[in-house]
Length: 273
Image (cartoon, rainbow, N blue to C red; front, side):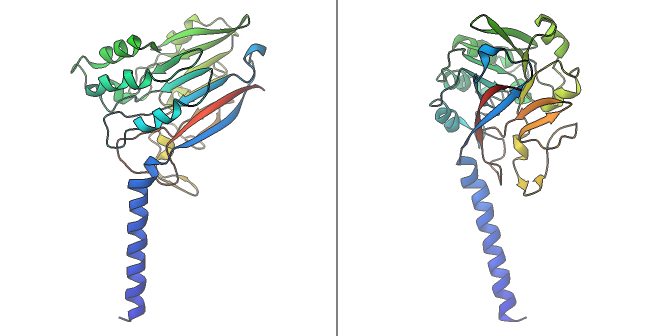
């Protein structure tokens, strides 16, 4: 074989090694901060330009924990902070979650829902119940198939949260039971698969995570989505059954590998549609 062949082979090997090194060691550490305007059809006037900081998939305790990115997000200004699940890699790391999220501050507080990792391992170290109790001790409310009203200048916007859809714990019917008919509502869920359980038009905005944006992407989209339902994409703002769904890339992951999909937090500015 010619020397040019061996040079080409060596260059290909070096390029592959450099790409792998970037995807493992650099990309997971490079936080992207996004700001995005989101239209809501029934947004109350008092909530125009209301800011929601969306964080997801921290995976505390994992090799690619997003703890440092949560600390960076603490400097951002928002009216409400939401975390859409997988706070921890498993419940052995519950003690890490509450003090970290307790550093986040917003006028309407920090609200979260649980992901599939927040239910593992069952029954050990106090499990999920202990995680929720520790969060509550730091002023962080976990919405588990439940709802609460956000109030501003006499207007109300309902915040609804379901337990993890991926592990079949979500109950949108129970979660929306406290929301008056026709009232504007934002739904928090770990997995976008919740859209298959949601009556059309019930939520005005849905915030999810779980997919990590695909984590490893090509210029044409994600290689793997970890969803049961097929979506146009699993990153950013998508329209599903006429409802805007924001899918976060998350800040952490179990496997320390990202490509064309850096960890991210997003400040969502609510706008009237």
